Figure 1: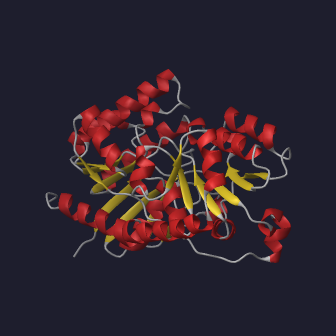
Figure 2: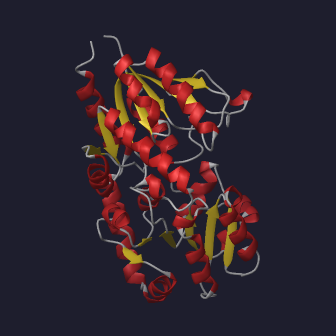
Figure 3: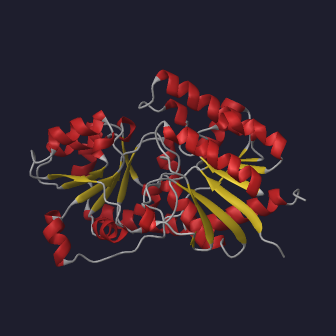
Amino acid sequence: MKKKKVAIIGTNGIPARYGGFETLAENLVAQLGDKYEFTVYCSNIYKKHERRKTYKNAKLKYIPLKANGFQSILYDIINTFHAWYTADVLLVLGPAVGFILPLNKLFKKKLIINHGGLNEWEREKLSTVEKKYAYYSHKLAAKSANVNIADNFLLKESLKQNFNVEAEVIEYGGDHITKRNITDSLIVKYPFLNKKYDLSVSRAQKDNNLHLLLNAYAKLPKRNLVLISNWEISEYGKELKAKFKNRYPNIYVVDSIYEKKTLDVIRSNAELYIHTHSQCGTSPSLVEAMNYEIPVICFDVGTNRATTKNQSFYFHDEETLIQLLTSLTENDLEKLKHSMKTIAKENFTWDIIANKYDKLIEKIYETIC
């Protein structure tokens, strides 16, 4: 029987080295590559010597453009048109070019649209024009889709309210992580590994509340904070890095780490993980932290409460974070890490997530001749 052709659009590509959509693409290919014929589009972050024709049974198609910033629009347009001529099902991860998707009426392919985080068009980092563009891109994509995917129940409600469309809820897996022990060589590179430390990992954008976290720990000299981010990506990040790097002995401002084994070590050995995102759906970094079986506390928004099933501890500003950090007991932390792991095991493994996508593809593929 001929395999069904599925194109994955909207990522930097695989092997994953950037973010949640890339990790999703890699794990879908790993889980379902024997059943479907996948094509994954890859950006120019992969140098010529790194490029390969296939990866985990998926075909890789390289485009000499960036998958982020202004180039991402042309990047996704090229990928979408190529997929229209070569695939049966288009899985679009983040509709950056929703304005072209109504053309699918001509190609009559099946569109699955994953809308990413909660109300992308409301992010503070976007200008007024960018917000309007994001809103209409998501709207046109939602109306053109055979199936819309929300990664959180709150986003499902938002898509219904904003665009009057129904959506399937499919989150992210987090069990691709590996618990690892600290090595002497890593201690040389990252001396904080010799100490007890709290950890947070996120992109340097305002709605991820890095400023809140850094300001709180500046007032907590007895607790060590390791904050990993892509500081240079924004003025917000650059200003925070300049203000806090090497100024407080308990605060470690660390540049992004894309090498998985190193990141595994740092996350595995944290005393506490602090999830600060305020505007996301089911955050991949959150479900990954939960899978490490370490205590996790979160910024108090509905999406984070939904992901942690209201079983974490929550803060909403600098003062409540400080109060929480100074009041948590060893017993609280022990219970917290076990409850987070249990929730992750029952909801956020790639076997569970891939099975949901498999059923969805089978369902919509029934009408393809």
